[in-house]
Image (cartoon, rainbow over all chains, first blue to last red; front, side):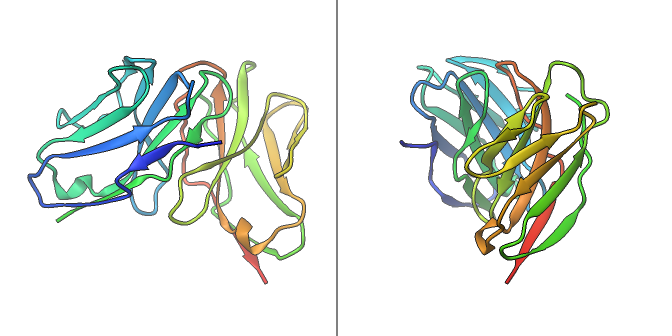
Length: 112
Length: 111
């Protein structure tokens, strides 16, 4: 069956630009997560949704990062006024609420 | 969630069993042991998980010690495509199971 999909797969932005990253979770999965992975590091938690409710945003590095999931399905991670330190792979993941979490392929963001 | 300790890297000959250890001495009673792997340029892939019993699926086996303070992931016949970073993660079985990945073990399967 279809897994978690993310778009775009690659994004190059100039410093100061806003970007929006999209995640389509597995159908029926109530839990959705965003992670950030810097080069050579393990993924780090950013934020968590249960359906449309954002229950944990403790991992968002600054108020330039904003995530939404308005209808409890597709989610968008928005980064405003991008900085070079935002360059990373952004991973989306979903789960049924218990059991394994399934990850998408990630969006590789490069800020110049 | 309890933290885990894994070796930084391991090598394994193609066709042999790969045994990846993980220490989780502070694991609590309601926490599960999960294993994920990440092949270069891909998202993490779920492998297997367990609470206290040994588990086996089509990808791997998970052996958890009786005191649950350590576990071993076994890939019975490693192939070149098993070269990846393997993460051992301890987490409670709740809806908000955000995962702490750490640095994992880089497994290199050698032809």
